[in-house]
Length: 370
Image (tube, rainbow, N blue to C red; front, side):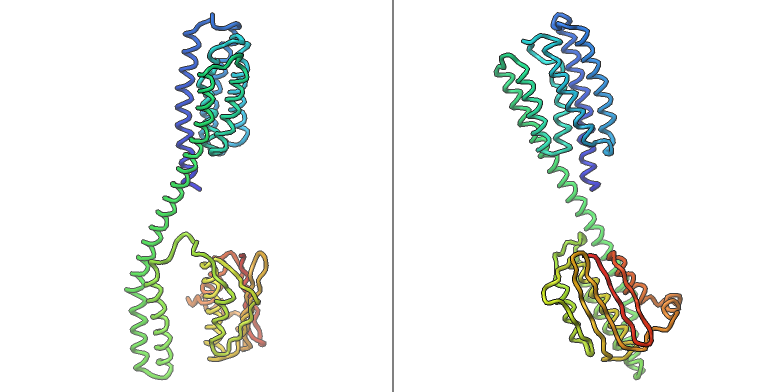
């Protein structure tokens, strides 16, 4: 998710600044204490050089999310542990402060940001246990440092996860608001244009009588449907999480249409509400075509089959079939009922619409992943 990644990027940039601050503190502190604090001064300076080099490399590596894999995190922690383990030999077994000092915090925080509270706890336990194990006689300060490591890692990791979740929710809310604004804009366009034309067709068609009256009735039905859609648009959620519905029950209601026979499985076929709604709309479009081209009340059959990874819906009639080239001609003329209401909708759902048509009738097979 882009919002969560943006939060992680910001936190790693903050850790990069912290790396240089604690590096400066460690280098200055070791140089101030001087050569006398080292049993092996040359090795001590090599350790400081390693810290400088690794700080530069880690800052570069963590800057790109692609490089923030397990290898980099393990390497970061391993370098910190190696510097801790080398301290008794470079200084003395009874050393007071380790060579890296607070510099190891950077590896701890990197684990916390990347792996949340679990990563912070693991890194804190490992660093704290090694630091305590290297000391001959741990005092209260050493135990206090261990406590801070065990507390700070999980807390930072938990806060990172919370920030990412809030950023993702904010991003989702912004997209929902943008989608709602777009729906409102489209609703105004539909109201100002399509609905007025449909109302005019309904009024003038009724005056003409005959086929005009039938056209007026259809225009009235579509006007009513569009107005209902506009009224309901504010309650439409944009995250596609409206819950689930029983597709079998939804399709079963289509059996109330004259001539339509619906066969569904005995149990419920649960699908996300948005997916089920679109699939039912496609079936309705198929049945409308049967009524329009075969005749009102013409027999039609709807069959629903449910599988583990998909659902298949067949819509069949016994009409004269669709003449070859008719669909292509209709699309070229701008009549997009089949290409948009049926094929377009199914493709948007990630499925496939298969058409079989001849003199025996027409059958649509609608296959949609669950």
